[in-house]
Length: 132
Image (cartoon, rainbow, N blue to C red; front, top):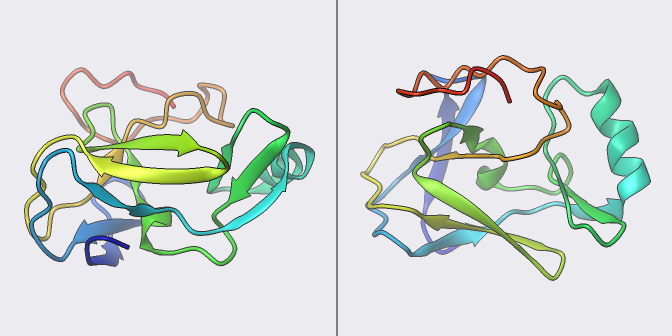
């Protein structure tokens, strides 16, 4: 982890990841922890999970952040995020889109998800898409 984070109650959903220090714009925050599994296993898990912490890589593999994870697992979706996710060589990295203040909740636009646009978005951002 490049920057110190804490997990706490989220204003969006469940738990959230919060900055313990100022994070400058465009800086790498850290790599999402987890275990590499098959895409087939990832989709099986996603069907039965209320909260999904899985990132597919497009090469038949996925990262299951529900196991051996870290604080980045708790970054909630937002239609107006302050971070972005970069998927590269079976790794998931998070970067700051803008300066992130101490104690600010980290958010990311998940893009396509296992929810297939059926999960109501709770981000509350102006211009929210309504569903994930």
